[in-house]
Image (cartoon, rainbow, N blue to C red; front, side, top):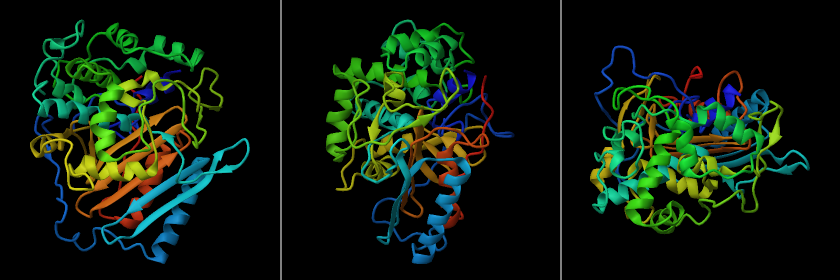
Length: 420
C-alpha cells in the first residue's frame, strides 16, 4: 500500500524521486543538497538552435558498433529488471538516430512492442501543464508570483504559496497520492473517475509540511492546483486549452489528454504490482483521471521527440515558440534537490545536463529529455512500472544508454527512500 502511494507521487524531480505520479519517475522526502543554499538558483545552460556543433566528446557517433552496444545494453536491462517491452528513441545533431523496440506489448498474446504504439506518459504531463500556465503568464492572465489563493479557495497557506512555488515543487503541500484513503479508493476500483476537487480534499486533510519556498518536495497536488488556475484564467477545460494552444501548434498529432479511461489503438498493455493484492496486473484500462494535470496524458515516441527539444530549448521544429524567451529562461532556472547533479525548475528537471521529465503511473514509465550541449534527444517508453532493486526501470534504461553515448552526461538518478 505504501509503495503505490510513493510511486504515484513520483513524476518529476528525482529518479525514484522525480517522475512518478507515484518522481522520475517519483517520490521524495526533505530536499536540499548538503552544504548548499537551497534558495540559490542554478542556471541551466542551453544551446540555441543553429549554434555551434557539440563539443568534442559530448556525443558519440551512432556507428554500427555503438548501436550494437546500445542493443545489448537495453536487452541486458530488460532481462535484469524483467521489463516486458521498451521503445527507445535517440536522435543526434548529425542526423544519426536510434529507434528500436524490444520485447512484447502484450504478454497474453506475445504481440511485439513497436514505435507506433500509444503509451501513458504519467508525469511528463507536468511539462504540458506548466507550459500552459506560462502561456497564460505571457498573455497577462496570471502572474507567476500570484498566490494560489487568488484563484482557488481553501488551499492551506493559499495566501502565501505562489504559482511559481507550485510549478517548482516548493509549496509544502501534502501529496494527495500518498494519502491512505486515496490509495484505498484507487486500488479498490481502478476504473473509477476522480475530480480535481476530490484529489485536493485528500491533500488538504493533512497539515502543510513546511513554509512555502523553504525546500523542494515533489507533490502532485501542486499540478492539480495549476490545472484549476489554467481553467479559471482561460475559461476552458484544461484538456481543451492544452490541445488548442500546445498540441496543435506543435504538431503533436499523437498526443492527447484523455477524458476517461479510453486508450487509442494501437497501444501497449501496462503491467504493475501497485495493486490492492500486490500481484502483477494489467493496468491499461485504469482510469488516469487521478493524475489529471499531474499525469493523465498519452503520447508516442515520435511526438515526444519533438516535445523534448521544445521543452529544453523553447523552440518548435519550425523555429516558432510556445512561450516567450524570458519565460523559457525562467523555466530552466533550477533549484537543488536531494540528488547531486540534479535540479528542478518550473516543471522540468536537469539531470547531469539532460533537461526534461520522466513519468510513471501504474503499468507505464517514460523518460523524455534533451541534452542541449550535444543537441541530442532521448525518449524511453516502457510498459511496466515495477521497480528493480529500488530503481525505476526507465532510469535504468536511460542510464545504460547515456553511459554509452554521452559518458560525460550520464542520466543517473539514484533511488531515493520513500517518504512513507
